[in-house]
Length: 79
Image (cartoon, rainbow, N blue to C red):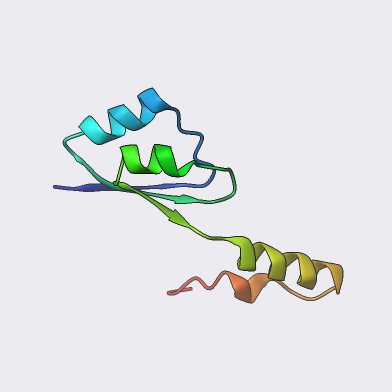
């Protein structure tokens, strides 16, 4: 079976990425770009996929500043 991981603030170093790359079970690591990850480190481990959260954070800040709800920015199905 395959394992997929989701990481909010990926603080990867060279050895950590090497461990991810050697992992037999880990198929993919999805990480937000809330912290900087260099292109060099990403090339070391193609299993890491970065999701851009800039627009989402910008919209959340705008809505909070203008006293609007941010609830519908995070839809949860089944509830």
